[in-house]
Image (cartoon, rainbow over all chains, first blue to last red):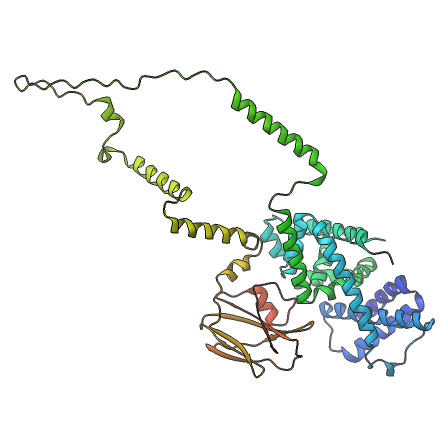
Length: 164
Length: 293
């Protein structure tokens, strides 16, 4: 129960920082509702948090889209929930496509080691396996390399991002 | 606030979270910390798009192809762009140094007398004179039986080395060249992905086809089979049995669905994990079969 309460606070703060307090309240409430109604059996933190983040993303896109269309923020009737919203899927797919384009542009600009690490992650290797493949003496070394590569990738992607 | 505020470990774990390669232990550390750190939680939420994008095996394939193209374009040696002047200066120094050494006037080596050939004396039968000393020429080339064992070994070793460097037989030369070409082509995977080397020796199926929504396989009994039904973004492991002739039902799927198949002689731990439903699916030399050809 404490975990769920903390999780709600985190989702609320995240959504408020991106879309404002009113939408954030609704989104946090809806995420908790879905978790309670459909995923009551999920209690392990390693499953609960990714699931909550996934639902949050979906709800945020739906809320932002409706809010932009209607020009208003409102809570949604629970009965409305089971109806699939294909528009949301289109928005999510567009987001993914844009990200993929950015990755295709950014990857060639990364350093050789960063590209190697990215490749190994795509091949499904975990950090201990990457450590072994790169011959690093310590797992923290791999963490540091990866953190730098992540920063580089983010910077390159920010530069290559198309103006909105 | 940026995510520079948490340490390198958490940043790395975030990145692996997006790629779906966190171990159980790392997952637990990251999630527990994210519940107590709003900045980290926000960063995780921001990684959701990346995570769902990289979740698709098709996306992974295209990104890997991009990386392969970069590797092929740049070649094995890559000079840092910012230090071009340094590399140019170094190359110039090397050229000057090599030219100096090549044209440096060197004194002619003095001729050393190693041996003087003398005409052998005639042997008189009446006077038993001691046997003449062997000519220096004979000492220069001792008979093989008297040569020390160490010398023999080193000679054999040199001969072998020479034969590798300059193969005499054209058939041997061809096969060596093929091996070198194959080794250089696979060098990255062998170096960086231990499982890729195993894949190179993977046996191919004697027969693999899709018939009546069943994957029909005939392979050796000792083979490990990893089969997945890829239907859009969804991945479904297909259960296999130990019979040499296997019929694996595919279950419900769309027309665009494909079966990705890998047969190896040894167990692949990453694929074994994927068979239990722990994704993402790694890149391998998949055999891809269309369910609706």
